[in-house]
Image 1: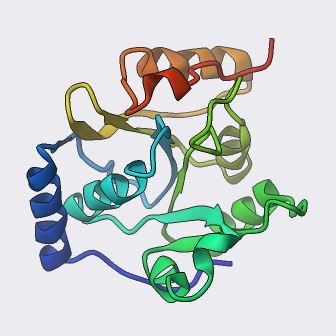
Image 2: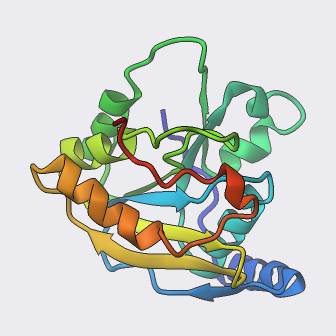
Length: 195
């Protein structure tokens, strides 16, 4: 499922910082000193989120894996997407992705999996909770990553350890994102569970 790809180095960190500076962005926070975790990528409302998120990861010198629709991995971009940590997902089929991701965490000494819980750039009524179930199943924390277009900052927020109280946990996560502004804020849903 996961192939070896790019490991950010000083040059890639410099390139990420230059790219962000050209856009007027800055990086906040630090990657926790933890070998395995799920990182939330939110809000996800624009195509720009992807290159900015990767630039933030480069700037922080962290190797992240991320999932994208299979169409992104066709020629001519497929090899580059995989090199950048991409994992193709066929949305037309059920693949039990939660269990596959849990297994990937168990099989590796180090893994950082970046997941946009909205699952799409389009407006959604609620977040998908796969990120939460992956973290619980793999017994790893959730790091709250963000892109705030209002302040042009991207980075790392708190590290959250899931408990057995999903509703309470998700409300706490939701509270962190209440002040974060997506590029297209009208598309950002901060509703995590169906009512």
